[in-house]
Figure 1 (tube, helix red, strand yellow):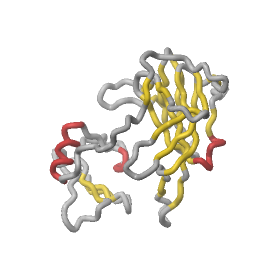
Figure 2: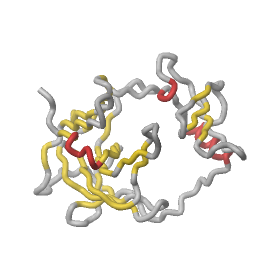
Figure 3: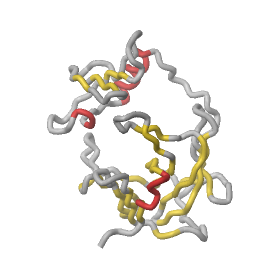
Length: 220
């Protein structure tokens, strides 16, 4: 499909085309996406790709493929560690109510946070398995409308607060991103670098104004 992220308009293309193409004269927000999608899914969310096509698209568009950042994004523990912080609270359920129709949640089962969305398990289309993570980071950021269509800008440069969830507990954290090209760094409340447990991590950027819509209590 051709996706115009400014208008939300899509046009179908044959599978096998480049992931994206940035040709002269094309609106920078307009991308060509290569995928195979489910016919039953709506056009904006039935897009899939893989690493090979992404690399091919980067070369075709002549985008930069190197990262000059020297600092690591995360400071990892060598082994899985429990949160022994005095502020640590129970976190076996994470409810993220973005709005009335987008209401994903995580359930902590056997050391991993399993993700649900639209009242059903969030399944990997390739493996057929439910998405799960050792760590979940909730990063609060300011959302603002950029036009009459309701498209939004998320302020990811600056600083803010959040939560770090692991091993069935969570603690309050802070984050900072000093420039557009800098990494986002996460810290404990006392200003030390956040040490993340080994494994994969899901980062949920959540509207600061809707912080009250987050719950760590499973509905009865």
